[in-house]
Amino acid sequence: MSGATSLLDAIAGVGTDRRGGYSRHGFDRAEAELREWFTAEATARGLDVHTDRNGNLWAWWGEPGPDAVVTGSHLDSVPGGGAFDGPLGVASALAAVDLLRAEGFTRSRPLAVAVFAEEEGGRFGVPCLGSRLLAGTLDTDTARTLRDTDGVTLAEAVRARGVAPEHLGPDPETLGRIGCFVELHVEQGRGLVDLGRPVGLASSILAHGRWRLSFSGEGNHAGATALADRRDPMLPAASLVLAARRAAASVPGARATVGRLVPTPGGTNVIPSTVDVWLDARASGDGETRHVVAEITEAAREAAEAEGCTVAVREESYTGTVTFDSALRDELAGVLGGAPALATGAGHDAGVLAHHVPTAMLFVRNPTGVSHAPAEHAEADDCEAGAAALARVLAHLAGV
Ligand code: GLV
Ligand code: MN
Ligand code: MN
Ligand code: MN
View (tube, rainbow, N blue to C red):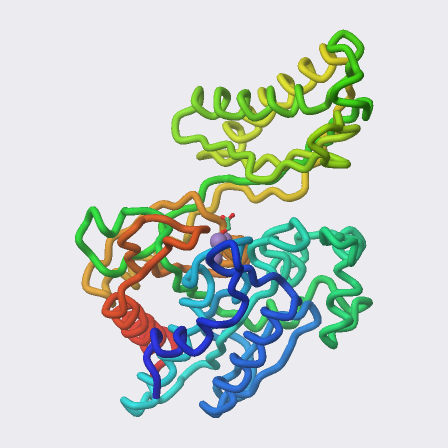
């Protein structure tokens, strides 16, 4: 029997990024190593581990069946991410199984721990890839041809891990087994710190999406090309970055971020021929999010035209506002002695599944409030409180 933190300690050396934090991406070597770790830990607990057609892992306590209570999270990270976003939910699920076994828990419903593939979209660009494919909310042909920065397609990447790319896609059989889903996650803000509480429940997720804006101009010499003769795509890209802050600031609660910008060919003394910019935009509702993105793309188009450049805009993913099942949340708040409800701006597989099955999320206090960065943290006592809360939730939902 191991606590959530000692389980996390065992994988602390996997996928470290020399720039800091962790870089563990869907179907890469580090994530594969974590999947092996999970499979060994789940098997040692007597759970039966299967990989579904989309490369998600399922560890069943007893026979797989309908109306199952499912918990879990993901093992991949953003580039340079923290140790907790994803793995805490997986480790806590295993720790909760230990706690339930120790108290002689008897199941009345099937129970499973799930590990979803490429939740962050850190390799192929589309977040919650495994759960979206499972739920049938991502076009399978488009998914197969997604490429990582080395040009490897998703089809090639899954094949290298023993998943048949021709079988990727909607999985109504697996989805149909989920009676309800509960994901435990490190909080990605300071809500619980401010409330002085170790564990909370999620109420909602902002609408959010990713857009890729590709600016094209003319590659040329940095010294020999007069300013008047340039068509430099970096200029409209810079305008876009500023427009993103402006547009988001004009809508209460909205956020817009440019975290990735790639000039090609990328030389100090070269005017780039193209610049690709990835925009992440989030707001309370669809209308607000679409409004922010429309403002930004309009500003990008104007700036591109002024510089004699062109811009192509592509939506890479989108998730509407998620409101978690309030009856389930109230029920679990009762089980947890009045755990507070918190809204979040972060996306999750639970947000994808919430459109299909009753879904809840438990948050564990994060003293730094930082996430998607190495400073993300949760104290050991809070992690154990989270695992104990998850065990109580699972006992309530799946016990006799
Ligand atoms: C994933 O964690 C996201 O919210 O981007
Ligand atoms: Mn994340
Ligand atoms: Mn996560
Ligand atoms: Mn996420």
